[in-house]
Image 1 (cartoon, rainbow, N blue to C red):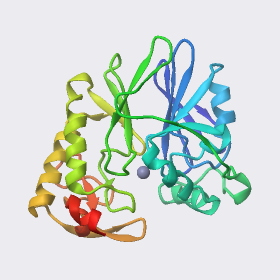
Image 2: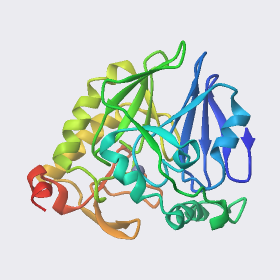
Image 3: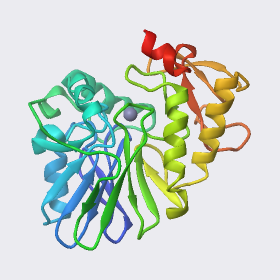
Length: 285
Ligand SMILES: [Zn+2]
């Protein structure tokens, strides 16, 4: 375990390091023979770039699974990133230093923070050179290949990265125990279901997923459960538990406890809004 005031690092494979930020958000440094890929960039509170420099001598590039506040912070240090074009605007919308500081401070809900972060610690936003990534692209790191799978839902530009040799996916917030589908910029449940069916076509190639929050790896059957949930939501047969998330009302597809564990023991859950179930409803707004 390698730690700083702002970050904690632990190995998940000999060439893969999980790094978590103050808010509990997680990114992954994957090293090949020739270069390294940083999958997501946390919230940009503290210098992730210097922390990563302590972990590897390889040239490092950053790819974002999506454009949210807790995944793009280091873009403003590296000055460039790979991102799906549909999420570039989201990245800038979420670049506000107060917003990113607020996310880091929210980690105090789960554990006492090792440092009380201030605005001084936030990497200032700036223009970032964006290289587009699309479904079907791949990154060759020298002996390690990561393939891009588009899974629009949580955001329209959400991607995940598949390492076939490891039988592992780095999934950001694409599909987990608390997948948020009610956000501005989330796809409808119908569209998310289609994305999950595409994701499922790769399911024989991997066993688990390391995500942007919470412990991993999560078994790949979570995709089947999420597809099932989408179908129940579309039919109106899910639990429709009223709740709230990030200060806004939403519905949870399945009853859960305070730690986002489903009461029936299954893994997937979706937080959504009634207005964003059908594809055409979203387009009409
Ligand atoms: Zn997100």
